[in-house]
Length: 577
Image (tube, rainbow, N blue to C red):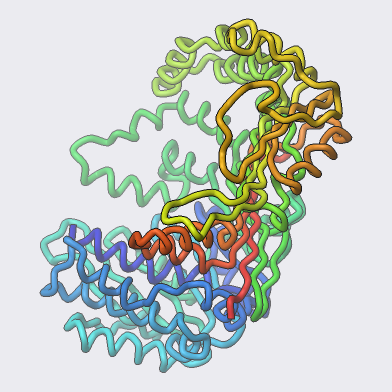
């Protein structure tokens, strides 16, 4: 448990810094790429100057929670042992990070960095390596010295090929595997990595930038290929190499990651990975990895200044399996534009699924997963389990919903009655839409199963009528639901903004626009809730208060394209100052 807390603190310190402190395309970029293997299993590098000062300025006013609260929570953990010097060392580093993040100048001075910085995170086998530009190396040593003095945890000064580095021993002397945190600075580049009994001396030389690796990323066109294939900007690229992972498991002697895994397996009572090293497994898993080579991450928009941060990010699970991609593409349905309109919505959700294609698409995927018939035991077992879940019944279950292309809804605006002692809606602007090739027929089918709908006569296309004229129900304060029918849309709405969208939706033809989309405006969504809670005399949770202070608009979505399965996120964060 102690090691878990150490690891957690370390991950927070390195990973968060790694996310923030990266970028700047100089000659250093190419020098660093010389030390990164082209077949590394994990890579994250930001390739243009990252404005760290502007980024901190744009986000600092959105976070009202005091760093003292977070620090107190860390020290209050059940796993915290005040006598454990290792834990205290890393918690002091986390504390310094949290406190300095309140001000850009303090942050840069504490960590010795410039206004724009570059950084990389990658792996050498199983060993992670993090590198970042520094302008004041003494600031890093002062930060570490202070953490050592306050915790009682100390380093051992070491050297390899005349390169000095600090070594912080993380394991006990009696542990079968030894692990040390390595920190070094050279030519204004800070390197944070690990040294273990897995390592050969050459690996540490590679990590510290002393000896270049063979077949480096610098001699590969991989990053440019990812950028051009997915239309990413050159700001940042990350990826997980599925082929390298599979090779490490099936042919451990073929890459460094595999060699490290093999050494760890020797310490186990049983090598559970041995089955994957059978010739059939090597061949079949390699073929699968070739069809699904990487998961890549990048940006389509990257704008940061003192006033706001706007990012459009994408994660793509790459695939060359056109059978599966074609089937998944046919699943995509219709999501209206209002779902993605962050300027005029509080909260919106759209599910775009072509129900008519659902059964045949799933069947095609089901059949593809059984071809070819695998010999590898784990893959045989997987195929056997797939065969037991025949999707044929799915066609029967979805027959009644055939023609549906999507269901979406949004809260465009709302307000609460502040004169009441309890939560009462004063006004609600909202919309729910069903998109289908023939929504009237679908309603009539549903009515045969619901007697209360049997006598409902839907209005003519384009005619707006109160929902209560079709289905009697008790009135709700602040809500006046109405219905409008279109050739391909059935819409229920309340409010003037929603009415305009509902009427205009009739001119929108159904096209495949996506599978999923979610939008939220944090300030619009949570401010009325906080106000209502305060008026009612209830204690408002700090988390809810924080939400209303986030001047953040966020959209996420899922779609299928020729390159694979893509999840997108758009974030617009404005300075509250």
